[in-house]
Image 1 (tube, rainbow, N blue to C red):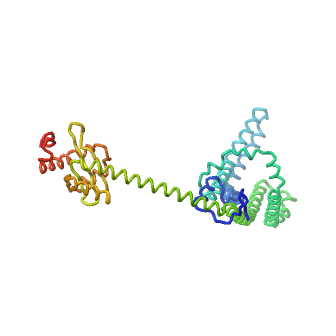
Image 2 (image 1 turned 90 degrees about the horizontal axis):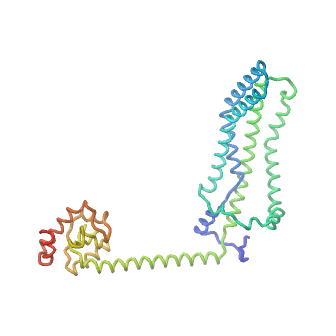
Image 3 (image 1 turned 60 degrees about the vertical axis):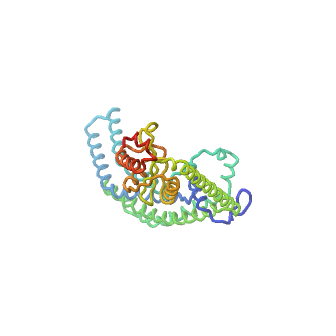
Length: 365
C-alpha cells in the first residue's frame, strides 16, 4: 500500500480537487504502448493507401535514372542532380507517412490526457539532475521490472510474427531469379503481413500496460486521511469566506439603497420583478442618473423604501427592462432612453408639483 512522505498510509480515494491538481501536474494514467499502437495503426493505414502510388513513383524514377545513365556521361554535376532527384522523390513519398505517424502520436498522447494541457508537467525540476538519484533509478527494482516487461514485449511480438516470418524465409524469391516488380510486391505484402501481426501483438501489450498504468495511477493518487481532512477544512474555510463576502455585498447594497432611494425623483418598475431609482439634477447632471436598481427581492426593498419616503413609483415595463439591462448604478442613462425617461419625469413633476416645484421649473414643465 502506498505511503505519503510523512509515512502515513494512503487509503482514501482522491477528491475531485486532488484529481484536477494531479492532471495539471501531468499525473494521469498514461501508457507509452497505447501511443505506439496508434502511431503504428496510422502509419500502416497511410502506407496501405499510398503503397500503389509509392511503387509506381519509385518504378518511374528507377527506369528514368537507368535510361539517363545509359546515354549520359557520369560527372560530379550529373551525379549530384541524380542524388538530389532521389531525395526529392523519396521525401515526397516518406513525408506523408511521417506526418501520419506524428498525428497518430499526438492522438495517442492527447486521448490519454483528455487533450488537457499540463504546463506544470514541463516545468524544470532541479531534483531530477541529482546524479545519486539517477543511479538509484537505474539500479532500482523498478528498472529491473521495466527490463522484464521489455523482454515480455519482445516475446509477445515475436510470437505473433513468427509464423509470417517463417513463411517468408521459405519463399522461392530467395533462391530463384525474379524481376524488380515482383520483388517490390513481395516486400510490400511481407511488410503488410508482418505489420498487421505486430499491431495485433501491440493491442495485447497496450491493453495490459494501460490497465496496469490505470491501477498504478489510482494507487499513487490516493490520499491519507489527514490530507482529506485538511482539504475539507480548506474548502469549508473558502466557503465561509465566500459567504462572508456575499453578506458584505448585500449589506453594502442595502446601505446604498437606504441612502440613495429616498433622494430619488422616481422609481420605475416592471411592476414587481424590477425597480430602478432615477435622480435628475439639471445643474449637476447632464442626464438622469440611476442611483439604485434591483430585481425580485431587491426590487421589493427599493419599493418599500420609496413608499416610506414618499418617492413616486411609476410602472412602465418596457422602460424598466431597458433601464435595468443597459444602465449601471451611479451612471447616467443611455441616450436612447432620454425621451422615455423625460416623459416619466415630466409626469412625476406635474403630479407632484408641490414637491418638485423647483425641479419642474428647471425641466420646463
